[in-house]
Image (tube, rainbow, N blue to C red):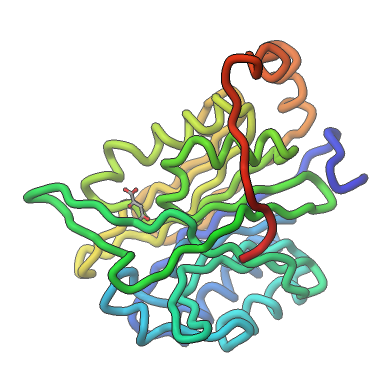
Length: 285
Ligand SMILES: NC(=O)CC(=O)C(=O)O
């Protein structure tokens, strides 16, 4: 099968990891769960945003690493030992005096094939509910990030990136059939928007969407919503976690995707003479 073939099926696993303040525990649990997912036939495995550290601006500098570093070494070995594509959620990355929220992707040989730095920083202020300002600590990435697998082409965003419809449109236009978003929505925006955004992105672009959240920890300073999910190009949720740690599985069916695109041919029907979405940059940041 070629990298962008529209035939075939493959199994995707999403790991909803219970992230603690102990980095070594996060890494070893992630490694164990990647092995478990591969044992169930998964060929592509997705971890959550900030899988090696608690999510919060006060934690980023303490847990930050260079890439390559300790956490990405574990990811590389887990990908190679289990022969999977591993989308390594995200980690706080330190580079040249700046901090980023970065996702690394490893191929089945353990090679680093992509690094995506969160493009849209999570700066929100909902009075009485939640104020979060990633930009106080982090710098944004400046590039789109896509990679080819033996099964299909995949576009990568991190959490808040999912709110920007243009990014998903560009990925779809550039041939992606699956978009993956490690994320960590919270107890305010999670119930309101998490699933809605995934279904919207899937339906608008006729792609599969997979999201991976940390498991919920009511004692954490930032309580993640959980509910990692996979949505198909028809907009249906085909796999969904609860709030606790676990793995969910979905069979990604590229023929089904092709069928949806043929039945409702919005790509051919677009009015690019009236509107268009274009990008100025591409590649890893
Ligand atoms: N944590 C995020 O980056 C985004 C989020 O929680 C939201 O958009 O809501």
